[in-house]
Length: 199
Image 1 (cartoon, rainbow, N blue to C red):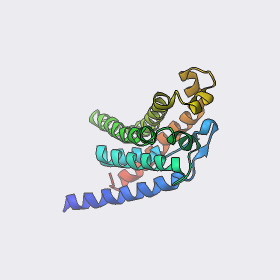
Image 2 (cartoon, rainbow, N blue to C red):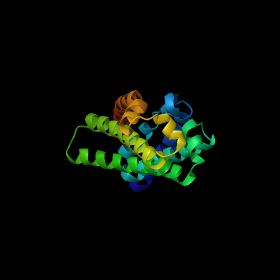
Image 3 (spheres, one colour):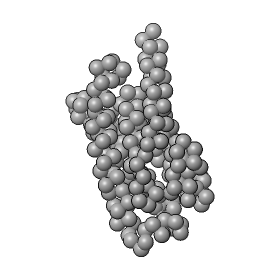
Image 4 (cartoon, rainbow, N blue to C red):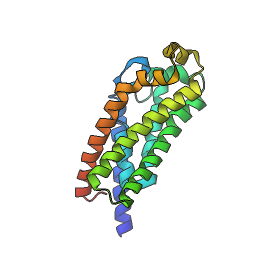
């Protein structure tokens, strides 16, 4: 009976987080270079906290799938994605989808490690939210440069700058905002879910 109740809770939470991802996909804040400030890593962090690796991987995958579909103008639009998906849909799938699944898994592992060290809930939730946003930016930008760095589109964006300079210039403010918001909101939601006995 307990297992059945837990499964129902998890399925309900997965559905809610998926719906939230769809909404968040529509409210990205556009920035230069075709990038945007996004808070989609918050549901991934919450899933990783509540359902460990399976939850992080599933919701990370949903985020990645939405991000990939945006390259085709589905569930929002990504100017950069639209420009690069024509180069290689397969590589774009790796950059958009696979990276987000990995972020979900890594975030879950970080939360698990924090709990094993008896880190207090509020701090563990905060670090987990921060980590989700940090690794999302790290993997997204690293794979962008690695897989598409030689394309004309990215070369024009880089405008002769080095890789590190380009990344900092492109996501410096974005990344800081995303990490702070993800840390604060994940902590608040995590505490609320804990009090509601949903995690």
